[in-house]
Image 1 (tube, rainbow, N blue to C red):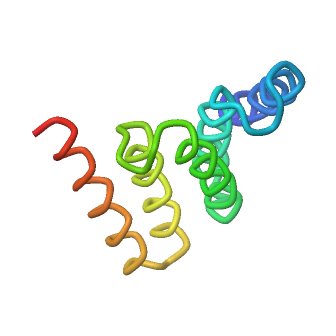
Image 2: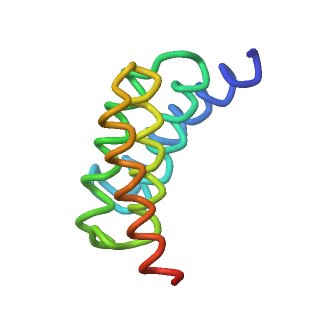
Length: 107
């Protein structure tokens, strides 16, 4: 657990640096935000994970489009966050959406 807290803290620092260097909507931020969200999820804060992943998705959709592999992986992570929050229907919907994108991407 201590390593995950350290990871979360380092990701907060990395996000601040990324925002300073690139601005608030740069694609570089989406990766850091996704990792930060997943760190919160691993620490049991699925609501914070969901909120951060939604933020990352907005950036990824603009940068890569809604059919990209990157977008699909974040959608899958978001689905798992909803599952942790007890919303199995939303989880299934998002995981199916991610699967459809990845099947189109990789066949």
